[in-house]
Image 1 (cartoon, one colour):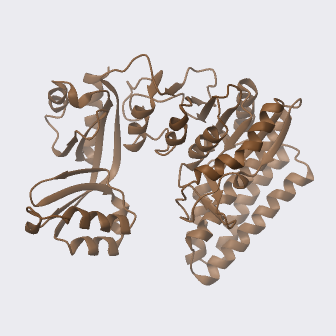
Image 2 (cartoon, rainbow, N blue to C red):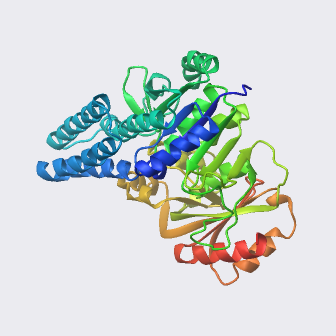
Length: 451
């Protein structure tokens, strides 16, 4: 593994304003991360998504007023920077593209996934160009350039949730890797979240995709490490907003971190760790607001592997129970059920089965898909229990350690458990509870098994 290249990613809060950007630039300077991936400025992606809704439903004046607010915010940053003509010109060009896209959506009363990706990509386009200028001012003795990530990250045509084409990406990055290794003064700023198809169409990797971008580039460039800079100093044993006794984790394995991300921890996107895990590249999670804080290292192997590492919560769950007597000793029934989920792109978080029933938890938003629910109901009697929360105990050898279940159930003795899911992973034990009981469950379990 190459010991020179470092990749860093800065989230929206680290791009919030010029103060935050300058702080992030100093982090780059301190850690000498030659590939810098940035998200859109704080809140911009949400504003762009709102613009799509406005373009479909509202009059043009209100749409244009929203566009002007986005333009003003980014041009104000240029003015604070005393940005040169080329920077302002690039901002105006991207805003013109935004106007064109919104106009088309407004008059057609339709927004295709392709158009949505193109529109969303503008947020990262704006922030990356501005941050390139910020970094140039903070690193006057370095050669800082803007790099369009779409020239390197190629994906399939699954717009809004595109899948990276790993082999093509690696080949694309070979010249870039050689250039960086031969010139230690060369620094690049690029966009997170986006890529493009072989045909040149802009795609996105899904929400939280900037972390994923950093990981993909880290793998392709044989990086020494990948750094994820947010507004939180590392990964905690649970959400500090829920439990005041949450503790920072010094180091954690890829598998534990992946379980945490999948089951509700918001510090990382679930897909982030897949590329770096393939190469064994360590990941550092820290705060650009507290750059000297210890943070958390995610590695293949760590010194300590406690029985219980963390407790997470995934809210907004719906428990779907499908019953049909024909399931009894029948072959292929589960396959029929999951073919419906695959057809409608719905993910299952947890599942249990009995002789004639299957119980599954999914995101509540998926239940709003009427065609999905109707097709599911053709397979049997279906009930829906909304406003549930999946509480997950993350650790090591949980399902092989006697007495753990007893301790968990003791802490949930006054909370109704609707479903239990254990056995599929040595790192995870899940219980489904009513959403209003979720925080109580987190605090009770954390107090006994972690504190």
